[in-house]
Length: 105
Image 1 (tube, rainbow, N blue to C red):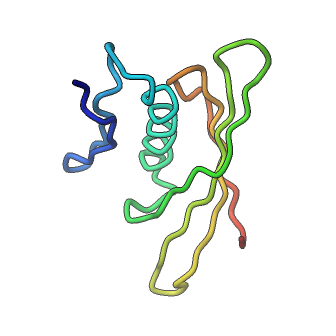
Image 2: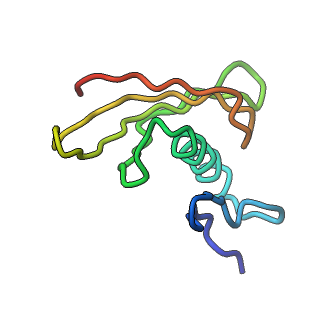
């Protein structure tokens, strides 16, 4: 029996849990997204309270590299509907780089 992969916050540190071996087949689709979200949250550019939704993924050639993209939504005192877009360039579960694009949905 496997535990579901999850992103947890301990004080000021984010941890991805249950993505170590052995994994079930669902981990291969969920774990890269969790590592991407972790990188975004740890960047300091995204509030911890933000909603981060992956909306697409594209595999790059015949390698383990792929791009995850999505939308970040959060509220601030000045603006109740902040929207940013993001992309994470992944090599399997490792975030090679990410980009946060500010703007309206």
